[in-house]
Image (cartoon, rainbow, N blue to C red; front, side, top):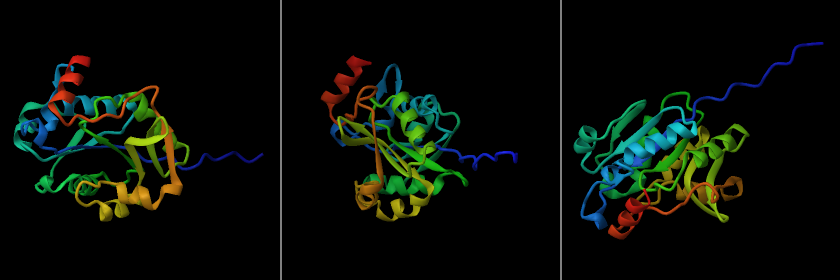
Length: 206
Protein backbone atom coordinates (compact mmCIF):
# COMPACT_ATOMS: atom_id res chain seq x y z
CA UNK A 1 0.00 0.00 0.00
CA UNK A 2 1.34 3.42 -0.90
CA UNK A 3 2.35 5.60 2.01
CA UNK A 4 0.01 8.43 2.83
CA UNK A 5 1.46 11.89 2.43
CA UNK A 6 0.35 14.58 4.83
CA UNK A 7 -0.92 17.84 3.43
CA UNK A 8 1.27 20.94 3.34
CA UNK A 9 2.32 22.24 6.72
CA UNK A 10 0.58 25.55 7.42
CA UNK A 11 2.85 28.56 7.69
CA UNK A 12 3.26 30.68 10.80
CA UNK A 13 0.44 32.78 12.21
CA UNK A 14 1.91 35.89 13.86
CA UNK A 15 -0.08 38.36 15.91
CA UNK A 16 -0.57 41.87 14.55
CA UNK A 17 -1.00 44.06 17.60
CA UNK A 18 -2.38 47.55 16.93
CA UNK A 19 -0.98 49.70 19.74
CA UNK A 20 -0.70 53.16 18.21
CA UNK A 21 -3.66 54.91 19.82
CA UNK A 22 -3.20 58.17 21.68
CA UNK A 23 -6.06 57.81 24.16
CA UNK A 24 -7.65 61.21 23.55
CA UNK A 25 -10.41 60.52 26.09
CA UNK A 26 -7.79 59.33 28.56
CA UNK A 27 -5.95 62.63 28.73
CA UNK A 28 -3.68 61.84 25.81
CA UNK A 29 -1.98 58.90 27.51
CA UNK A 30 -0.74 56.39 24.93
CA UNK A 31 -2.88 53.29 25.18
CA UNK A 32 0.14 51.02 24.87
CA UNK A 33 1.38 52.20 28.27
CA UNK A 34 -1.87 52.15 30.24
CA UNK A 35 -1.40 49.97 33.33
CA UNK A 36 -3.02 46.56 33.57
CA UNK A 37 -2.09 43.85 36.06
CA UNK A 38 1.11 45.62 36.95
CA UNK A 39 2.45 46.16 33.45
CA UNK A 40 1.71 48.20 30.32
CA UNK A 41 -1.19 47.06 28.15
CA UNK A 42 1.13 46.36 25.24
CA UNK A 43 3.07 43.83 27.33
CA UNK A 44 -0.21 42.20 28.33
CA UNK A 45 -1.31 41.96 24.69
CA UNK A 46 1.99 40.39 23.67
CA UNK A 47 1.70 37.78 26.42
CA UNK A 48 -1.89 36.97 25.41
CA UNK A 49 -0.79 36.45 21.81
CA UNK A 50 2.17 34.30 22.81
CA UNK A 51 0.21 32.19 25.26
CA UNK A 52 -2.56 31.72 22.69
CA UNK A 53 -0.17 30.18 20.20
CA UNK A 54 0.80 33.00 17.84
CA UNK A 55 4.14 32.69 16.07
CA UNK A 56 5.74 35.95 17.11
CA UNK A 57 4.17 39.36 16.65
CA UNK A 58 4.29 42.65 14.80
CA UNK A 59 3.48 45.56 17.11
CA UNK A 60 2.43 48.85 15.53
CA UNK A 61 3.30 51.90 17.62
CA UNK A 62 2.24 55.49 17.09
CA UNK A 63 1.47 57.84 19.99
CA UNK A 64 4.58 58.46 22.08
CA UNK A 65 6.36 55.68 20.19
CA UNK A 66 9.79 56.52 21.63
CA UNK A 67 8.41 56.49 25.17
CA UNK A 68 6.68 53.17 24.56
CA UNK A 69 9.88 51.65 23.19
CA UNK A 70 11.83 52.89 26.21
CA UNK A 71 9.27 51.86 28.82
CA UNK A 72 7.72 48.55 27.78
CA UNK A 73 9.59 45.25 27.57
CA UNK A 74 9.41 43.67 24.14
CA UNK A 75 10.53 40.22 23.07
CA UNK A 76 9.91 37.93 20.09
CA UNK A 77 8.28 40.72 18.13
CA UNK A 78 8.93 43.33 15.48
CA UNK A 79 8.17 46.96 16.32
CA UNK A 80 6.81 49.18 13.56
CA UNK A 81 6.21 52.92 13.85
CA UNK A 82 3.14 54.40 12.18
CA UNK A 83 3.78 58.13 11.72
CA UNK A 84 0.21 58.53 10.46
CA UNK A 85 -1.41 56.98 13.53
CA UNK A 86 -3.59 60.05 14.15
CA UNK A 87 -5.51 59.33 10.93
CA UNK A 88 -7.03 56.24 12.55
CA UNK A 89 -6.70 52.51 12.93
CA UNK A 90 -6.66 51.92 9.19
CA UNK A 91 -3.16 53.33 8.77
CA UNK A 92 -1.89 51.11 11.59
CA UNK A 93 -3.40 48.02 10.00
CA UNK A 94 -1.73 48.88 6.69
CA UNK A 95 1.63 49.42 8.40
CA UNK A 96 1.34 46.15 10.28
CA UNK A 97 0.30 44.08 7.28
CA UNK A 98 3.25 45.45 5.31
CA UNK A 99 5.62 44.38 8.10
CA UNK A 100 4.45 40.78 8.46
CA UNK A 101 7.15 38.18 7.84
CA UNK A 102 7.29 36.52 4.41
CA UNK A 103 5.55 33.20 4.46
CA UNK A 104 2.99 34.11 7.11
CA UNK A 105 -0.06 31.91 6.63
CA UNK A 106 -2.39 34.36 8.38
CA UNK A 107 -2.37 37.18 10.92
CA UNK A 108 -4.22 37.43 14.22
CA UNK A 109 -5.21 41.10 14.54
CA UNK A 110 -5.37 42.10 18.20
CA UNK A 111 -6.20 45.55 19.57
CA UNK A 112 -4.05 46.67 22.49
CA UNK A 113 -7.04 48.18 24.31
CA UNK A 114 -9.07 44.96 24.62
CA UNK A 115 -7.64 43.48 27.84
CA UNK A 116 -10.55 41.07 28.16
CA UNK A 117 -9.29 39.04 25.20
CA UNK A 118 -7.62 35.90 26.54
CA UNK A 119 -5.15 33.31 25.28
CA UNK A 120 -8.06 30.87 25.01
CA UNK A 121 -9.83 33.17 22.54
CA UNK A 122 -6.65 33.55 20.49
CA UNK A 123 -6.17 29.78 20.47
CA UNK A 124 -9.71 29.22 19.18
CA UNK A 125 -9.14 31.54 16.23
CA UNK A 126 -5.83 29.88 15.38
CA UNK A 127 -7.55 26.50 15.53
CA UNK A 128 -10.21 27.81 13.14
CA UNK A 129 -7.50 28.75 10.67
CA UNK A 130 -5.80 25.37 11.02
CA UNK A 131 -9.20 23.86 10.21
CA UNK A 132 -9.43 25.84 6.99
CA UNK A 133 -11.10 29.17 7.83
CA UNK A 134 -9.76 32.05 5.71
CA UNK A 135 -11.50 34.73 7.75
CA UNK A 136 -12.45 34.35 11.40
CA UNK A 137 -13.53 36.62 14.20
CA UNK A 138 -14.22 36.14 17.87
CA UNK A 139 -17.94 36.09 18.59
CA UNK A 140 -19.62 37.21 21.77
CA UNK A 141 -23.17 35.94 22.08
CA UNK A 142 -23.25 35.73 18.29
CA UNK A 143 -21.91 39.25 17.65
CA UNK A 144 -18.62 39.82 15.89
CA UNK A 145 -15.80 41.24 17.97
CA UNK A 146 -12.04 41.06 18.36
CA UNK A 147 -9.61 39.56 17.68
CA UNK A 148 -9.89 38.89 13.96
CA UNK A 149 -7.89 36.43 11.88
CA UNK A 150 -7.03 37.10 8.23
CA UNK A 151 -5.52 34.51 5.89
CA UNK A 152 -2.63 35.75 3.78
CA UNK A 153 -4.70 35.87 0.59
CA UNK A 154 -6.75 38.68 2.17
CA UNK A 155 -3.83 40.88 3.23
CA UNK A 156 -3.77 43.08 0.11
CA UNK A 157 -7.53 43.62 0.11
CA UNK A 158 -7.52 44.35 3.84
CA UNK A 159 -4.80 46.98 3.38
CA UNK A 160 -6.60 48.58 0.43
CA UNK A 161 -9.81 48.96 2.43
CA UNK A 162 -8.21 50.13 5.67
CA UNK A 163 -9.07 53.83 5.91
CA UNK A 164 -9.80 56.08 8.87
CA UNK A 165 -10.84 54.05 11.88
CA UNK A 166 -12.38 51.26 9.80
CA UNK A 167 -9.52 48.76 10.06
CA UNK A 168 -10.59 45.51 8.42
CA UNK A 169 -14.29 46.40 8.45
CA UNK A 170 -14.57 46.78 4.67
CA UNK A 171 -12.96 43.39 4.08
CA UNK A 172 -15.19 41.66 6.60
CA UNK A 173 -18.30 43.25 5.12
CA UNK A 174 -17.32 42.26 1.57
CA UNK A 175 -16.74 38.66 2.63
CA UNK A 176 -19.44 38.30 5.26
CA UNK A 177 -20.59 34.99 3.82
CA UNK A 178 -17.09 33.53 4.25
CA UNK A 179 -16.56 34.73 7.82
CA UNK A 180 -16.25 32.07 10.50
CA UNK A 181 -17.60 33.39 13.80
CA UNK A 182 -15.82 31.65 16.66
CA UNK A 183 -17.77 31.93 19.89
CA UNK A 184 -15.52 33.20 22.69
CA UNK A 185 -18.02 34.68 25.13
CA UNK A 186 -17.32 31.91 27.63
CA UNK A 187 -13.58 32.63 27.76
CA UNK A 188 -13.19 36.34 26.97
CA UNK A 189 -14.90 39.72 26.94
CA UNK A 190 -14.94 42.18 24.03
CA UNK A 191 -15.03 45.60 25.71
CA UNK A 192 -12.35 48.09 24.80
CA UNK A 193 -10.70 50.66 27.03
CA UNK A 194 -11.52 54.20 25.91
CA UNK A 195 -12.47 56.34 28.92
CA UNK A 196 -11.22 57.04 32.46
CA UNK A 197 -14.18 55.00 33.71
CA UNK A 198 -13.09 52.05 31.55
CA UNK A 199 -9.55 52.35 32.88
CA UNK A 200 -10.74 52.43 36.49
CA UNK A 201 -12.93 49.38 35.95
CA UNK A 202 -10.22 47.34 34.26
CA UNK A 203 -7.60 48.41 36.78
CA UNK A 204 -9.86 47.28 39.61
CA UNK A 205 -10.61 44.01 37.83
CA UNK A 206 -6.93 43.36 37.19
